[in-house]
Amino acid sequence: MIPPPLHSAPIPISRDFYLQPSVVVARRLLGKTLVRRFDDGVVAKARIVETEAYTQDEPASHAFRGETARNRTMFGPPGHAYVYFTYGIHHCLNAVCAPPGRGDAVLIRAIEPIENAWRLLQAYDGITESTMEATEEAARRDRRLGAGPGRLAKALGLDLHDNGADLTSAASYLYVATADDVADDDVAITTRIGITRAVDLPWRFYVRSSKFVSKR
DNA sequence: TAGACGATAGCCT
DNA sequence: GGCTATCGTCTAA
Image (cartoon, rainbow, N blue to C red; front, side, top):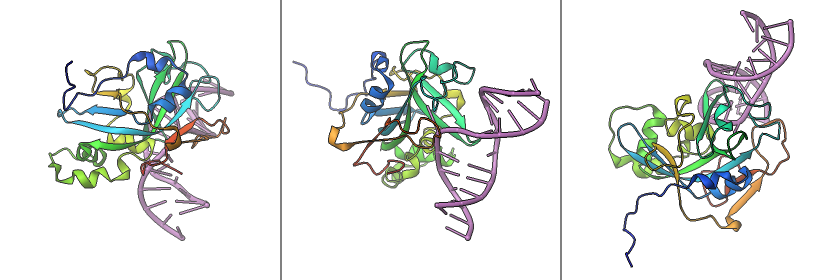
């Protein structure tokens, strides 16, 4: 019997996970760890605390009108990042679900920093020079780094260049790793936010106990 | 090729 | 609570 290492590396979630219906993936992504390795080699980790499911069958989804140049990633293989640009300002991160040919995805709406939050703060503020970890504790409490889809994309330093990134490989600069599941009694289910169509579907999930949820 | 608008967030009242 | 910046994408012409 080999004891587990004290500081085990994050284990990526397999591509099969993303073959489940996006509503299931949205619920099960809560609590999982988002791992981001920046160009300077710093690896930041954050806990996923809010998600929304989208499918090609309902009009709120980008995929509803079929495949286009913009949403092509949604129709590709599961377990990849679909990053899009909206309102002329914000980028949003999704995890692609379902087999190629189907346009289903999960929007990641909020994360809470776990490790190297100071580096997320640097990315958010667009600071390039090195800053020490002295700001770690403050950064870990900064809701700008994760409370909202536009904010988390900015903190992770993501833009359209990151569309298509593989979320299932430890070699990737952005991936989702295993972590403890969130108990059902700590999960809230509501309708989705910021959409004008299919507004009644209860496809938003968030961790009740998290302070980083974008909206109660 | 013009025009409308969006899976938002920050600032203002 | 309201207003709006700002631009990629889609649609219709």
